[in-house]
Length: 146
Image 1 (cartoon, rainbow, N blue to C red):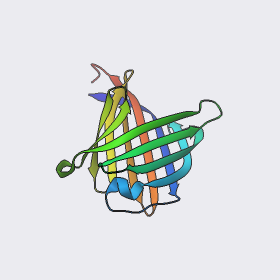
Image 2 (tube, rainbow, N blue to C red):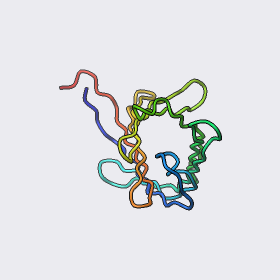
Image 3 (cartoon, rainbow, N blue to C red):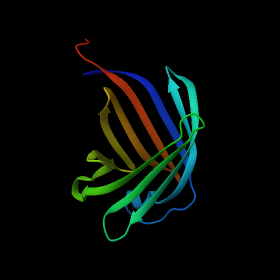
């Protein structure tokens, strides 16, 4: 399977508040930063992003709310991240309406891969030196290409 990568979204988020032990617990707090959208190596757009992560009491789950503060197309993604299997470091991003994405934690980086409307996407969250780095890349699936 080959993919044509066309956009990379990158956000370096600065923490306002964080503590605890597990990866999502370390991410808890209010983060903000700029998302830069690239196409063919050039910046095409940018948008301010605010990410609020809060622990849900008494269950291994976290509210994961991302606000894209765009003048052109503002949006809020309000999801729940749930621990599915601790031994496999397997999490589920529950988008609501029956849509669930599989996430896997490798070290300090949480990955997911999914397809929507014919576009393949990968996303990751990684803690590096007190910053939460959020990356998304996308591309169309090329069927039958060699």
